[in-house]
Image 1 (tube, rainbow, N blue to C red):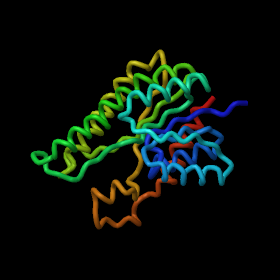
Image 2 (cartoon, rainbow, N blue to C red; image 1 turned 90 degrees about the vertical axis):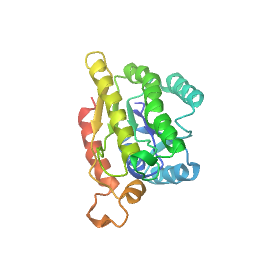
Image 3 (cartoon, rainbow, N blue to C red; image 1 turned 120 degrees about the horizontal axis):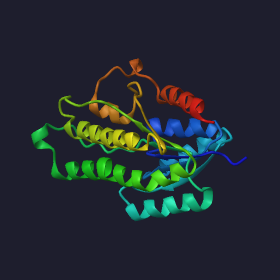
Image 4 (tube, helix red, strand yellow; image 1 turned 45 degrees about the vertical axis):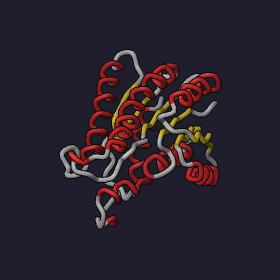
Length: 219
């Protein structure tokens, strides 16, 4: 039997990388998309060491033409997607609302909101073709000091995702969110410097929790 195909956007580090390893170990062929080639190659080494398989996709999600080529290749080779985990996020430096640099705000809007909507439009038919599932990790930081740009981005992402879920309820694909517990990622370290990281949950633990839910849903 052909393996199930999972696309992970934002796969090079943290939760995305942990999910890539977990899905590969569970028998999925993982399409690991991220900008950092070196981190993707390290991820591939770990996946191969456990007998899994992956296709590395060094691509920026703001590259619309590149995403279109990728989605066409996915359709031509596999006929669609069984799973999409959208773990890619841009978070600029902490800043008061009135002092967010224009370049950081523009990149926040482009990467986290515009690219998410474009990805949905491209990936929706691939998921429908295989009755697949889309999952967005959610993180509610709305109202926290100096996190206005990131908080706005995550809120907007979830609003897009929730509308897509409502629109897809009867026709597919299955569109879900997942709220990981606080994890000791590089992103969180920027937001909470000096935090006791030993009290946080490892990305692999949260990935295993989500993977268990995915495998329960799988036919």
